[in-house]
Length: 282
Ligand code: PAF
Image (cartoon, rainbow, N blue to C red; front, side, top):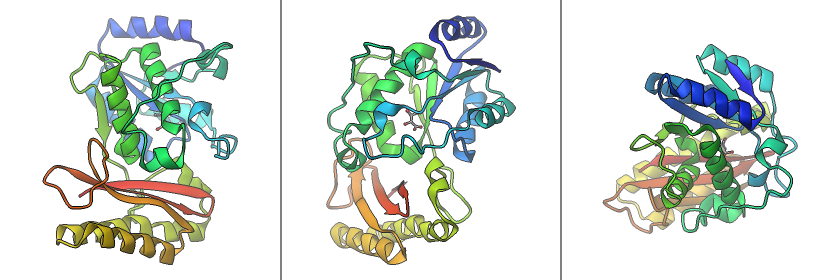
């Protein structure tokens, strides 16, 4: 596996690889877990070459968020993706991503605005901006993202469509189902912030969501079901619930009744030092 921290050698390497078959990109911020490795495996099954990016993107962290504390373990991560057969690791130095004088921001209206966008102003501008840069840097044939960050996936799809970022494959932005621990908790680098007690309590999140989905499907009213979901999380040890919403799966517009179209239940809740998010199809 080749590792690059500067853009020019990265570009030469991807040009050489491309002559020999399609390239799939798996963008990450590192602290890799089984969920990321599932993306790398899926990428490997679909493309001749897999490029993984690891960049803790300062532009998607708010002033009071965990940028400094975010786990950084580049050597361990590099060994993990090499063992999965990745051909290339793009781990840009901060100045390679945002050189002096950098001044451009991408803001995606609509899908960015509710849910995590409301709780974390500017977060999705940072995501859209860095992912657009990663696409232009690596120029992959397609890219894979975890469905755990459902809103992020919707923002990236909107941005790529609006900016005519024509990745060569049809459906080039591929969402991969969330990988879960044995008790149902969605895998996340931020689970590392939980104490053993909080970790045990956190399993209430997927359980409460599944209960809510069963109730919605049985005809329970949306508002009351979401209120009961919030109360169940607080009773289980979560300190607050940022949101618990039923939304249209694509536009993320909040819904007050269960529609014919695909819908998604999305939740963000805080426990200990962690803010956990999850989403499920309804
Ligand atoms: O999901 C993530 O890890 C990040 O938001 C991403 C897509 C790599 C952009 O920094």
